[in-house]
Image (spheres, rainbow, N blue to C red):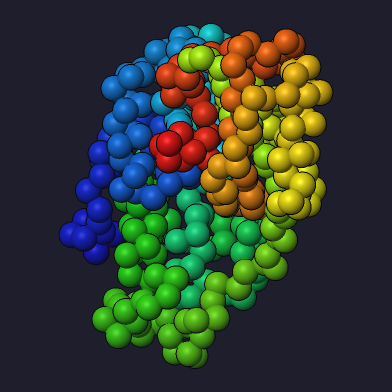
Length: 342
Ligand code: SF4
């Protein structure tokens, strides 16, 4: 804690006690690095200064503010939880660990962070930085990311936490883990824990923490069709039960394996015929893009289908928009990248 008070990072959400702002910062930081998260945090605080303001905003507006952070279910949970606080709790943010934990999208880590930072309740935060530092310091080999590891680290940290200033303790341990005890290349020679650190003494710094076996990453093949006539285009909103729920995108044809490049135009031509009841006047193959999600690789191929008039049939779930309108709708990072390429 002494180290932290002299060297900790000065951030806009540190040293404040407003649980709503702390919650915003924590949810944003689950998605991005501090430097990028700062801009999003400032935008959310200025667009939605209170939890009631966030609750009152439309989901589409909240998704738009979140755009670029990815994993949009977090934004939807944030909005749902704000509505719950505004409507069910009279706008008063819960002030117990259990109350905070009951909010949609709030897990143990976030609940401990809010409870300790805003209310100084002695709940230890356990994130990747804490797992790394503590596993090395105490020589713990339990694979992290498991329920068993969480319980084991929590027990130990409950003994260590400073009951007067759990906020400082938690921030200190996270900052030390991220600034000093880094995943690779940590500066053990100058570390203040060098004498007692088990991993350093036993030469196991590179071995700890032990990770669970990696989940296999699947590949999905997306063929996006940019259907245009005059200044209009077709878009579709993504449905529940899959990635990017609620976001808008170009009409999509998905396959389990890539379509042979020789057959691509013919296949997409047939798809368009069946969707719209007519073939395009011209079909161009556009850019190919790769997009990495946590457990999925998306290989996207964009195609441009030009029509000289409105297609004969517009499927029920597709929507006609003017080209410029698409930018103002909530869209995935992948679609945003495609639009900026043009
Ligand atoms: S000695 Fe090295 S491994 Fe151990 S806590 Fe310090 S920085 Fe981390």
